[in-house]
Image 1 (tube, helix red, strand yellow):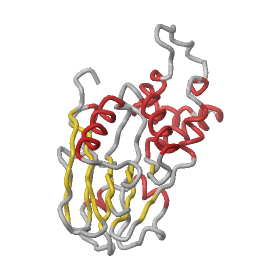
Image 2 (tube, rainbow, N blue to C red):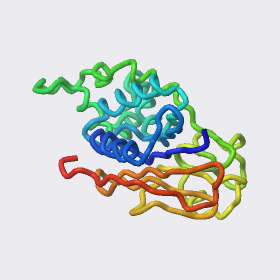
Image 3 (cartoon, rainbow, N blue to C red):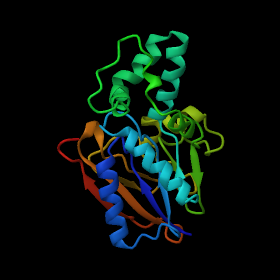
Length: 238
């Protein structure tokens, strides 16, 4: 299995996820043979985090060779859960005001009055979803590519990097021309269009609920080639 479909950040956009998946099926995606690699940031900002996570978990059960990496927003969600229990409002607010409120709202039943301010918001979030997030790896490597949410700190190799860098790093990685021996495929840093460089490809093109969701078709046999891109514009109501 040398064909990889790498997905940029989803951020709670279920309709775009399914529309783009339909494009891939029409293009000839074979879910049982090809490998989909999701680069993290499934939660926050968009209107349908619950539906996104439900779909990803369903796919993982059906196609265990697919890869679902951890993003910094999943990390913030987990940290916010611990912060609520520990009475740490600063850490909780960092998640809540960077799209966390939208994640929480996606789990509320339609028409339900909003809970009181002091009610634990994590009581509403599916515990199976939280447990699934906790099991996400931070890195996936093939013969031709290194897949990671945010990037690598040059000149360190993937195994030597601080785990936080893998989901948080920006400028030191984005502006680096360091050759890691394999092309690095990443999301995290929003851009108007995919970033294509000899040493890296960036796929986060869905900033602030605008832009479009991007997938890159990659092949270990031709890692230096320009990939084929697929895109789904954000729906207006999202």
